[in-house]
Image 1 (tube, rainbow, N blue to C red):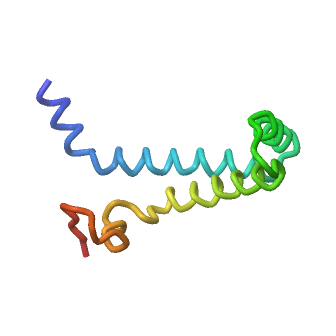
Image 2 (image 1 turned 120 degrees about the vertical axis):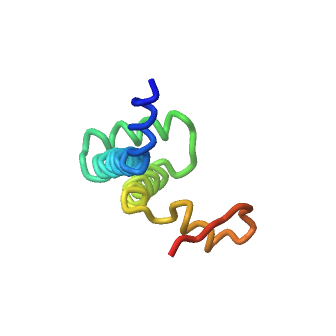
Amino acid sequence: MKTILSNLEKNTVNIYALCRILIGLFFFIAGFNKLFHPIFQGYMLNTISSIGFPFPQFTANFTAFCECVFGLFFNAGFLDENKLCVFNHHYSGCIIHA
């Protein structure tokens, strides 16, 4: 049991990076499909319309665009916890790594 925990502790940074890349890639692909694939555009528009949001076409495109762009940002590590400290000076326990 100690060996497994030891291996996990050694690879924590790698596991974190892999999860971050996969989640960012998932959001990018989902947003990209909702922007440029007609079938997924229809699904997104129907969902937004059935919920009752105003301006469903704009809302669907804006949401898909944000999902795509922020998926790339998440994948690239933009605004991760170390960089967030620069933007949020009230964050307690903030350590900025050089």
